[in-house]
Length: 301
Image (cartoon, rainbow, N blue to C red; front, side):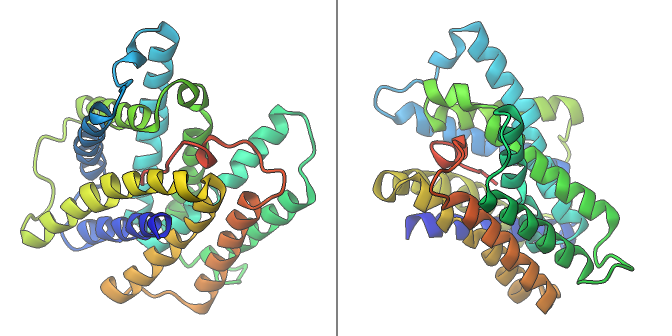
C-alpha cells in the first residue's frame, strides 16, 4: 500500500503541475526551481532528524563533493526541468509515460558498459517500449503526430535525463543515505537554477487553487511519497516496490482525464500498457541489471 500510494501521489503531482501550467499560467522553470528549493530543504531536514545522520559527511571528500554537484546540476535539474516542460507541451499522462522508457536507456548503457548483448527479455522490453511510444505519439499512423514534435523531443529527453539521474549517483548511494543524496541534490539544483534564471517574480495567477496545487506538489508529491516509499523498501524489498511504482503513469492518466478533461484514446491506453509492461519485464527479471533506482534511489518527480 505504501509503495503504490507513493506512485499514485507522484502521478497526481504531475497532473497538478499541468493544472498550474494550463489554467494558472505558471512558468515550468519557475515551478521546477521553487519545488527543488522547498522540497530539497524539507528533505534535508528529514535527513538531519535521522539517527546517526550523514547529512554533512558528504562534504568531507573532494570526490563526493564533485559527485553531488554533478548529480545536482546535470541530474536533478535536468530530470525535473525536462519532465515538467514536457508536461507543459503535452499533458501529465503523456509526459509521465514517455519518461517511463528511461529504464530502456539504463539497460542499454549497462549492456554497452559491460560489453554484453542484451538478454531476450531486454530485447522484448525494448520492442514493447518502442511500440508503446509509437502508439502514444502517432496513434498507429505513420503520417502524423498526435502531439507536437517538441513534446516528443522533450519527453525523450526526460527519459534520457532519468537514466542519467539513475546511473550517476551510484557511488554516492553506496556511502550515504537516500535522504542525504536526494535532499542535497534537489536543494543545490534548485539554488543553481535560481541563480541562473533568477525567477524571483511570481509566475502565473495565484489564488487558493494555485496554492493548493503547489502545496500538493511539494508535500504530497515529493516529501510524503519519498518517505513512505523508503519505508516500503524495508518491508517488501526494492524489486517489488519498484514494480508497484508502474501504477504512476496510470494514476497520472486517470486523474488528468477525470480532472482536466484531456483526451486519452484507446491507442493512448494501449501505448501506456506496453510501456508499463516494459518496466515490469526489466524489473522482474530473474537476473536484473543492478540499477541504483531499484536499491536505494527514489525517482522524485
